[in-house]
Length: 457
Image (tube, helix red, strand yellow):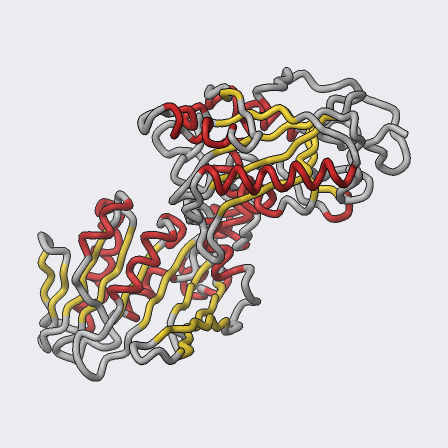
């Protein structure tokens, strides 16, 4: 609560007193008549616990404050107001268009998308003179926003370390002005909450008894595994980069010209597009993702580059030409893509598939069976008794390595993934795997060999 940064995220585990800290922080400026604050949860039903807790706290501190349940708003004697808000659907963010709040807070930030969170930057401005304008958030790991929250607050800098973004703004007179915004992550676990442990010593046992992924997240604040994660099998183990054991990520190697090559594609315009280059070992049937093109805006998760199909086709063609020139032979690529790129709503000549053919980039329609495609990824990620999977990812494919562990289950269709997450690499991967499906049956144990020899030499 003493941090000076514009943004601060507090939490990382259960039991740290996050919600209480957020509710009390909102009171900091209620002595100012024009002060306005808003505290968000994803849905209004989820807000009920916050509203009940605020009733316990606020009336003890300000006995004359009043709550309007229909407006979800506290009003204080000075005239200051604290609102509770929700964004059940992404488009709900526009309900706050034209409004301004001195203090904006998000409880359980990983339940929100980046678009929902960042939209409120534009609503964070002074309601009058003399107020401090800033944003605070709390969260546990997990949820649809896990990836962007982790990238923005957790991996960007060590805890308690101020991180500064710098932006160049072209002013009306043509001069460039540099502006800055800073942020920080403050970790907490149940071990920081002495009063909770004093009142309920068994609460730690409750957290310890959870399934491993949820226990690691809620008890220890681990951001590497969390409840709802789909591909818990995926391992990026640096110790196995050279020998391929107990990892899916490996160092790259020169792929022989006679190995079959594949291109998988998921189209995106306002959302990212994804292109994967794959090959298959002719002896073992093991798959290798050796290159990727990911059309995502810098520093903006799940935001596309607005590239038309011809611009994407040029990028694919450039890499195909580069690879063939490097090897000195003509290569054949089998392409597979989302069936939606054959959509001829603008005329058959204008469909993305048709446009890309003009650049010598050809695709066939991918199998859109979502559940079967998901299971193929599970089967390929599964390790055999020697610690080897049936699919490897070259370590230069950084966006696959970043996004696949962040795919989460849909809260309504629990067998499928949540399509609101950054699922574009996931989609093109399952199209490719459905070209080369395998059964769940585990391979028989092989005699261990020293080192890693993907070329079978």
